Image 1 (cartoon, one colour):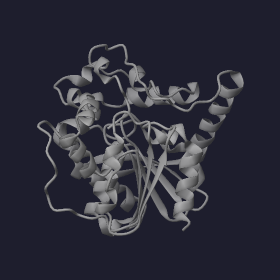
Image 2: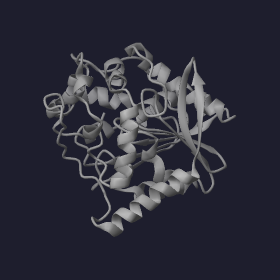
Image 3: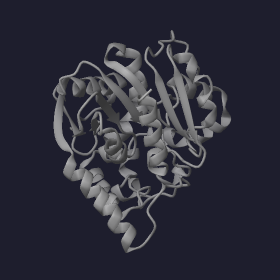
Length: 317
């Protein structure tokens, strides 16, 4: 569930891997780097940090703002910092809470693939909502965080006010593409490699942070990844990503009961556009799809202004 095109090199070359993802970055030079560092340090000064406990596992979160609760869930390879710009924008009238998923950064890193089952990832989000003294929230997720967000909305409708998804089609849409689309099967080769035993031994913090261009931000990501557990990161794939032979999901459809906003960078090379078709069928209320033609998988990095404006406008309806 990521936008890395030549992932085969990841498991062959421990020193790093190449990517076709185009990431929006500041212009090179001292002025651009200073601006990026100032913005990063600004958000780090503003947020408050906390922890929620779920069955003995501590989940770290950063918090900013007051108002209706928005819980933000990152994907792979990432951490709470991916939400730094949406947090700033939404914190004007919302309480924004960006979590580190289990296995990542300042959250606990339990051993065992069973500890990364989707049901446990969903219950982590519920624990964060309860830790903030709330009984429901606006749920927002990207990549694996998007998968958790979809599942949370389907299984915890009473706790889901609204749902915002970035570059992760509905799980049924992805399953359909894997079962019927050879191109999607090819693009998901990286996930099959991630499911292999010992795949995590070829990961490095430097390789995982390839997509962060701003030096100040990259330094923080390297710190976060060095605190993380690479095996835990890949347990998301081993436990939850479909395995061959790929088949359609024929289980009963559980529709999302709240309004849904999807934002999708169309240059995502791992999650094809075909998986976007018919996502509205899995939503009981209104469904809004915003496509960003020039953005890739990390749409919140590639088009931060577009993403934040779209979210704020949608929430204000």
